[in-house]
Length: 70
Image 1 (tube, rainbow, N blue to C red):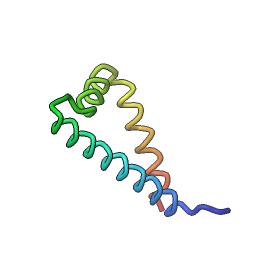
Image 2 (cartoon, rainbow, N blue to C red; image 1 turned 90 degrees about the horizontal axis):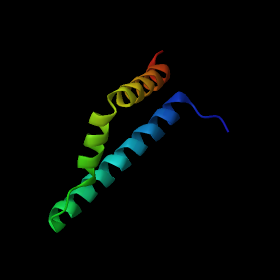
Image 3 (tube, one colour; image 1 turned 135 degrees about the vertical axis):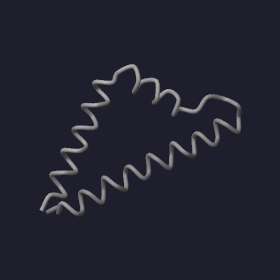
Image 4 (cartoon, rainbow, N blue to C red; image 1 turned 135 degrees about the horizontal axis):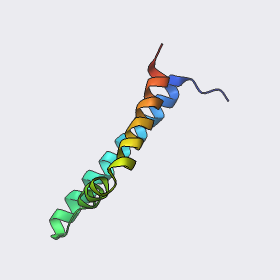
């Protein structure tokens, strides 16, 4: 089976869209129940470990740059 860069990029975009949808759904449910949403936890982890967050952003940028650069 041979995956093209466009197919891999499409899978990555679909995965990010799914994660974003699930975070929005969880936040809506949490706010409706009167508890803290998980996005507050993600935000606190990103602030606690800024180097890891930066490294993850660099890796994602390198991956997208590799797939999209002609």
